[in-house]
Image (cartoon, rainbow, N blue to C red; front, side, top):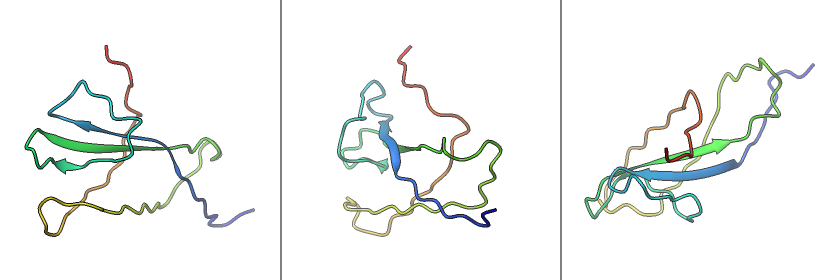
Length: 95
């Protein structure tokens, strides 16, 4: 029996969506954007997917940690970032 096992998972996929360009695909890019763009062309939200298929069925995750690093902020001040989970993965279809 393992008590309080520690697992490390790297993202299996990531992208961002931009309200100013809703039909654009950003999947293969090297940057993830969040918040209002300097250009004023909309707001961005980042989506990150983790493969948790190796967890046993019915496993209970009591807590999780994620580390995010900001490398650019156009505003020059402190930035607040909110992190949440999705009930189901987003659809990649454009229908």
